[in-house]
Length: 302
Ligand SMILES: NC(=O)c1ccc[n+]([C@@H]2O[C@H](COP(=O)([O-])OP(=O)(O)OC[C@H]3O[C@@H](n4cnc5c(N)ncnc54)[C@H](OP(=O)(O)O)[C@@H]3O)[C@@H](O)[C@H]2O)c1
Image (cartoon, rainbow, N blue to C red):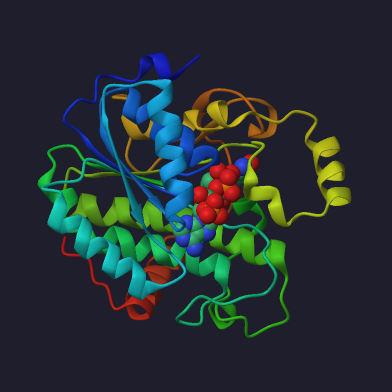
């Protein structure tokens, strides 16, 4: 049973966690800080970010905490954030692409992408690309991207519906975005390997964890879902697959980690058994990568 006690000393490591003001991102940032890392809490709301920093510091730790504003629904803002981050940091050891939004009302990012696809995947594709030179400066960098068990519900990526072209189906669009996160992780892993790069690219999912992610679900639907899941985890436990992926020496690049319980709803970190044809589709992953390059204008400097 892997817990935060297994996290090695991270003194001197530079980490960045998106969506770190609450939920899994908050617990992830807190544990990395406790282990000694210098952690930037990348948040879209500075007030919430400063409150999170205060809370983490109150609980104690030996690292360093910074707060920086990052709105993943704007590629312009992502670039602005990354430019500043690169001025302030000499390297990046742990990048956690955690921020996410689930079943919001139909909405678009600043550049006109469906919000879940834009925030959960495209913003993180752009962020990772902008920060790639800093990741290359670390001797053992890791990129951890949050996917979800919901990814099994996406049969593929509908490239003709990434800008809300078709009638909105909130859950379908969420599943698409989380499949995209997984395909991104695997394709990044393959590209890193081809280029003999030592950066690890891994994915994690927190099973079923009670967080603010459920904020757009009606009370009736939430009760129905909770009855279906039976058990849910608290954020500290939901963050364990992420923390394992971000820090453990046994982690293998190109792997998806999640909780080890029934249906992967709850439990402790282990390689995920979720598997669908879409997840294994290398052509789809390559097509998504090309799409993202054109959509963001970012071409990774392998
Ligand atoms: N909870 C689960 O059961 C579950 C299951 C599977 C996967 N996941 C994944 O786990 C990750 C963390 O989710 P969580 O459960 O911790 O949810 P959460 O408590 O709602 O946290 C999500 C975080 O993302 C931030 N965020 C949302 N939109 C953003 C934007 N446009 N730009 C920057 N940050 C933004 C939120 O900021 P604000 O607080 O300002 O809104 C918040 O900090 C997500 O990727 C989610 O898909 C969660």
